[in-house]
Length: 138
Image: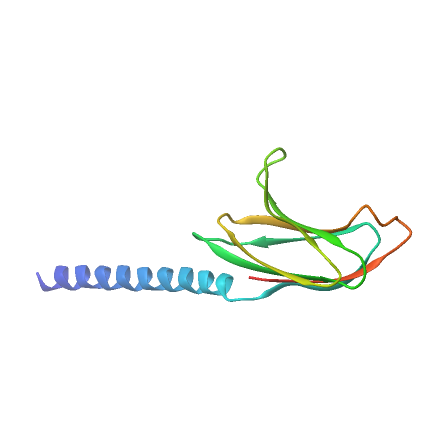
């Protein structure tokens, strides 16, 4: 009778230990994905446009902070998520002038690949360039 009891106690202890290891591993992964990190910190000379893309892991809701500044000419900032080849969800479409630095705080709800494009406005021809600085933190 005692041998059977010890065997059950051992199995229960093993099950609790394995569950604790699994919960710890999942928690560590989620924590690692959610600590704030710089996804993009780049300065580019833009003749027409420049695009960045990055992957985000999302459980529930996650904030993405986008800061864009332009040195000379106005630019448009577009931030989007594409679910498949047809459906595109635009999260930000704003103009940034050379006088201001624009900051956007965007809440995202889905894991996947996100795109950020900075495009020079059409009123300036293809012969001129502008320097933009982009920083994305999540």
